[in-house]
Length: 101
Image 1 (tube, rainbow, N blue to C red):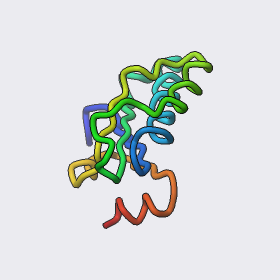
Image 2: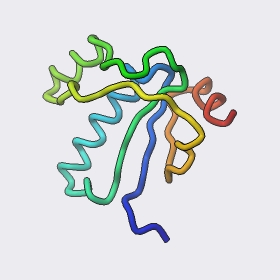
Image 3: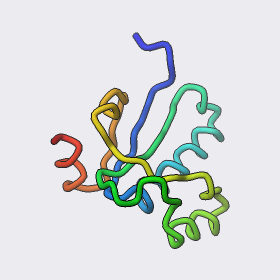
């Protein structure tokens, strides 16, 4: 049995819109529920072209208008090492195919 936090990965294509929005919102909700020390949520993308880039300006604006901090996000790539997460949530069927491959 793991002694660390339950690890959740949220995956989309470029990791600049959908998955980082989910990452930020779910982490904020976990914090409000007092569960930040028990659940760790991170995001990544199956594509490589945005690695290291900040969140898309439109996605960041949606989060900011809703009171969330979008400034810390930097896009990351899904690789074999991400399969060590307890739960992997994909945004669509294409992302699922990429994760399973």
